[in-house]
Amino acid sequence: MDINFIFYVTMCCLILLMFVVIFAVLRGPTMIDRVLAINIIGTKVVSLLVLIGIVLGKLDMYIDLALTYALLNFLSSLVAGRFLKHVMKKDVE
Image 1 (cartoon, helix red, strand yellow):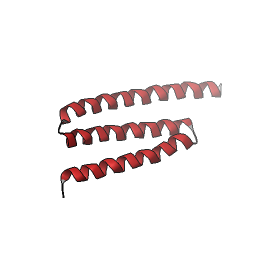
Image 2 (cartoon, rainbow, N blue to C red):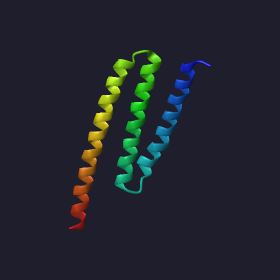
Image 3 (tube, rainbow, N blue to C red):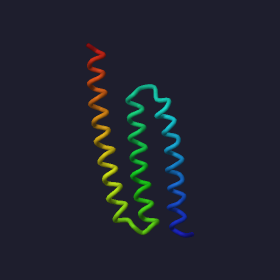
Image 4 (cartoon, rainbow, N blue to C red):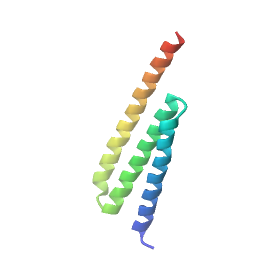
């Protein structure tokens, strides 16, 4: 069995799981659930970028892209968390 086949199957599974999480983004009961679902999608995209880099043989370039995307995903989660904290504080007052 070719190792690339395993990577392709793994990538397909990740993409299918991303569609399941998109359902959570659209139907999440609260805004926090939606933000967490978007963060999960970002994490799966980072995994996909690494796998694509392995399959194409350009791992060094795709690792840089994955790290940049992971940093942006982390920062967006922080910003969304602070925004939600600010909004919830206003709702209480």
